[in-house]
Image (cartoon, rainbow, N blue to C red; front, top):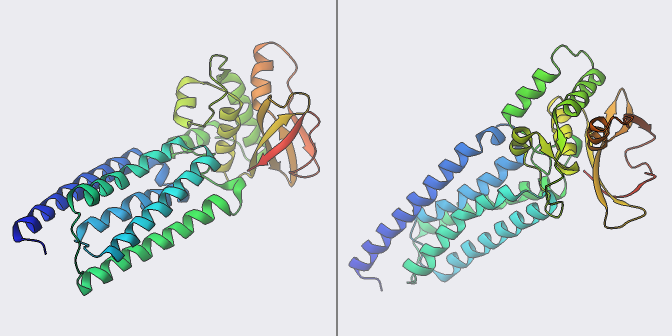
Amino acid sequence: MKTKKTSKTNTRSRIIFFAIALTYNLLLGVYLKGFLALSPMFTTLYLLSVLPTLFLLVDTRSKILRAVIYFLFFLILMMNFAYTLECRRIMVFATIVPYGIELIYFFAYDRDFGKDGFLTKIYVLAVSGLIIVTLVSAYNFVCKPEAPYFLNGGATLWDAQTEELADEICSGCETDEEKVQAFYHWMIQNFEYDYEADPFIQYFDIRRTLRTRKGLCYDFSHLFAAFCRSQNIPCYVIDGMSRTNRTDLHTWNRVYINGSCWNMDVTYDITYAANGKKLYGFHELESISAFDEDFFITKIY
């Protein structure tokens, strides 16, 4: 059995670790506030960072309850891993830090076992239920997204400042076609291809792209999609593999305007404009999954 001295020490340690995890989550929330306000997916993932911290508010002693907690940690880590692979969002690793803080406490400071009180069991099960519901929501966002062409929080991500910029760019535009054209021409005039970037590691960081005004095809296509989606204009991002060189990968867009689907490539036209070549522009398609002459389409999202 625990002595009173050991119990007080564990309680003190638990409170300290809870305070550390809570402080971290508060700071993370401040950093992500622009995304949390507009992205249900990021809000869900942020909740998966916050909710496990609540386990530190009670002293769980039984092996069964701790096994439940560890299993939930495992499920959350797997969901974060799936999101990282599916959406190439490196930022999501910031949400797993609290799990490390909590596991350090359980393994290093509270290795005693015993019986749990009735209220402790109810509390742990209630928090576990909230986490499971949040996990289901995260799964639906990552693996079964509804209307992905509108989605904010997957590979395509924007914040409040980006939406304000999009509003500014298309101010005065009355139709979706005018807005799309405004985004397209604004990007051609304000961005340049980053020939020094390493194409092996590509993930879309909207803050970096807008700050540097440089990027690769992955950056430009997701920025264009972010602009369109922020204005409720359906826009897909297309990943493809060259038909002549399988190592040549590319990303571009297909956007819906006036009931028709249009193929367009901001990256090509940024480089074409810089070299004085004729722009690719917009080409009407029969459907979003229509055949492409130059690339095998590997992903539409």
